[in-house]
Length: 338
Image (cartoon, rainbow, N blue to C red; front, side, top):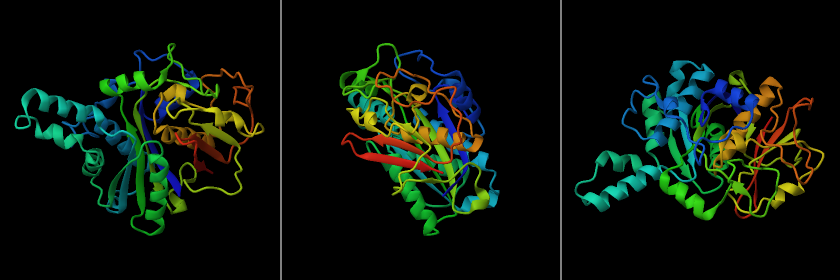
């Protein structure tokens, strides 16, 4: 599959320009205890014309998908053949908890039907289809630690079966107050606000994050704007660069310390925050790396195990990137870019 367009909303703003600025500037301490998307990044009347009453979860996804489609420049008539796959680990939990709070306060006969409709996991994908006026299949994929990887594999199936000509595939996750409390109880939160991806620790540190990253994918090479992407394994296991999703959310990160010491390693979780859908953000950075042949230095370089990590003075060509994640069962999940 070929990446024809990309869009992103994250804690440093909206759009690829904001992302490149963040990668150049490096790590910045979160203003609060989590990396949250600023309110001003979610105010676009044109892109959100059908989502004015939507929650932030839906707005993040809608804006990232809108930007991915706009970035591609495909003909407007192609909208009839665009499918949508939205991946999320935790869904619109902030809205769900708000709805439950209202039931406890007002009773089930006096709660908002709008709030209920926004609490279901497929609401964001439906808003994307409504705003973009697409006519292809639409699906939300919810899975704890590898929803984006499964979404990429499904997108490959849709395109190979000619169910659609394009697939908007992306992820969205959010930090609500309840989830932030759960993270404080279940994760080892970094007191200094800094994720340290190369510590390869048994009990790694995390900093909750939120955002959305989307890709418009096609099988026709004439739409290739960035690079190819696949969620299927590569028996050769060759890569010029590994981008690690070591963000403190999936238990022990000791396996990352056993990687091939010859291949340079990068990790951009300190830019985005800890998310179970971090792979989509890593893949977006990888696609920019291949397109521009520009190496973005690691934002946090604490390296107690002397791993071969990417630094500002590295110079080499990048044609194959593996975005690697070990899930809670220590299973290897890879998104390949080439």
